[in-house]
Image 1 (tube, each protein chain N blue to C red):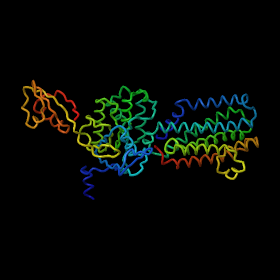
Image 2 (image 1 turned 120 degrees about the horizontal axis):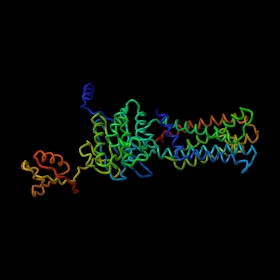
Image 3 (image 1 turned 45 degrees about the vertical axis):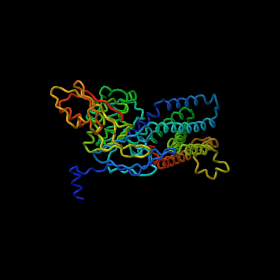
Image 4 (image 1 turned 120 degrees about the vertical axis):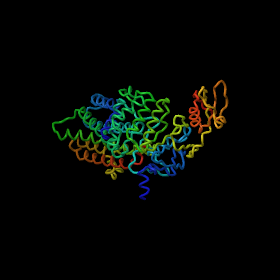
Length: 286
Length: 224
């Protein structure tokens, strides 16, 4: 027991924040999902992938208590703060972004982020020029970022997000991801649902699930590959035998490599180390 | 802070589409034309105002609760305090009912020299509208989990509220029925405002009980 406490203190053991056991939810005679079981620990990030209508939203809303489960149980560690970012905010907010964020920050009390931190994060997400605009007049993308800021203002231990990038360009999505990472580094657990595996979040999630046929299962390894182009320079070294295995064409100092999904980062890193210029990359559906 | 935030949010729900001010305006206009259009008898005018206040409060509360279900789904998760949320809703509607009762009471032009009679007149209108609101609260699950049962229950309760409770069948269960029709018949029999004071108190207690029941009855469907 003492050993476990010591390990917890030095961060070797991650405390479970949330536990979902055999959860099922029926809506109008049809199961939205059945027998879902998973748990979320500190510093863990879970990605739930599934087609439109597969029950992702229903699952997340049941986990946060917005739906009453037909069976199963959701337990959270006492004292954890849960924030939920819905896919589309339903509240009609007719006050300015700045006032709204400040108001929600104050509601959360002493544990919320500071006013200055929230303003910095808003600026990081491109909201600086929109702070005086009424929330209901914003575009869907900007509203979604307001909803995200609203969720993180609480400084949550568990952040649950329903398709947070659906209306975002890659720039804002990357910045939002930076904030996830920061939260994760500070011991929070993150659950995100999205219709497909997003290249923006590659490598961020520790656990990937597929919600399909109303049940949750481990997400199969992505079989998609990428076609990467590199240009050789006079300083380039000869490519290794291992990388040559993936090379498809070499023409006029241009090398094209067909990299499997899970090898792409390593190949890119190696090629850059060998002084090749990275020209670009396209995804190949297999 | 949460209370202030909720109070402002709920007040906006009622005022956003101008539904409350517009209906209140209609009520006042109707009162002003009552003598011309319907009857100039006090025995008709005041009971009509009681029933109008009852329906005004009932419809306003139904409109409010439906809008709340549609718009504030995720707000409930953020507030995460059922009792604070539901009690603030009741408080906001009670405040709006007080305003309605005061304005509609003033425009009845039934003031007398007796302050007790004037006070009772306003109090009866107020407590009647609280009953209307409380009935809507009891059946609020018609917008969530009990779509048909709650809607039918609402109709039945409204029917019993307005049914003549002095008839041979209902007289035995008179004490359990919402006392709105009793107020109307009592006023028509006595034509004295102060005779309604005990009934106003009864209505107040009845409304409190209904609010209390709705508070515990709907806890499970909070945020659904």
